[in-house]
Image (cartoon, rainbow, N blue to C red):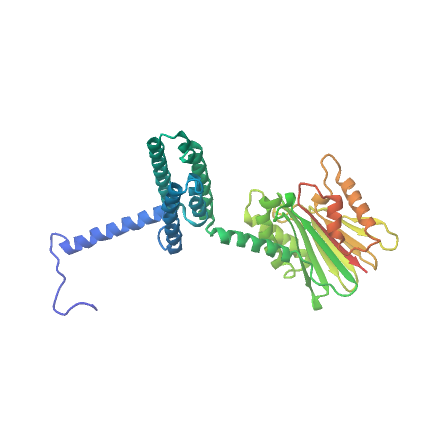
Length: 405
């Protein structure tokens, strides 16, 4: 066999392995135990030291800051109180991992004890009770301890998320901007105008309502818009809305119009969320003829204002089931035509839902307010509608207006 020296045989005995083989077995067992221990430490969140050069650099700086603050407190106690130790503790909660943060806390505790001993000795030596004002009071110790506990919770949350404190905010900002960009209606040809506005519940950055839109078909002469409302509101529904908006954006235009809602329904079912249902309305508009079709999945009906008569009509399709409820759901549509001067309005239930009142009352109010905006044109009116109709509602709100001029 390759690797053996000709004419020599392995050095073994009939009684068992050699001392060398026994040593290799013990070494292999030891290495295996070390690997298992490291995996266990990594799972429990203690193995933070490997490959953490930036972490150790920040730790060294804050560790040096502790004796510096202690020395300054002893030298100029009127300017540097004992509670100044919260500064490295607070910085550590933003930069360090929990394991190294605990070491910093130990150093801060030693520094606080040192200050207490020094100031107590000065007070006894000078026999001046007024010197106690510069000492470590119980309140100062409680403040440093409370900040330390809060900082440890913040560090554990950062460790669980797996991003630095600066990167976490950047990531959330990027996700919010992606959701906003996906909600923009594409540029429409001459004679058409679309306006969309969205307001999350409670003034938050993320919403359970979202819009995806695209121009599809031959020569991109078809506008497809999906207005969806995910169960929940605000931050609770924001992550699911972001995931669904990306999935819906990929499906939109890739499938025939009547296959979109069944495919979206199947996608939600595969997620197996505890609160995984959503409503949606799918608009398919021919930009040449003005003919459109609305397909609904448990969503509110569309509202069309006829330019000739100035009347509003409900475009209510045979209501399909909510998305994510059961497989094999069927979704029927309603057809109509947008003539010149007509407006089609779609909204989520946050625009019309009032506790103790029927949805039709809220829809009547919404159409009445929209009528008052006709004189000034519909440009920018989606945001004004939300401010007038549903300004203080604690729910996500979205409204879409499509106007043929």
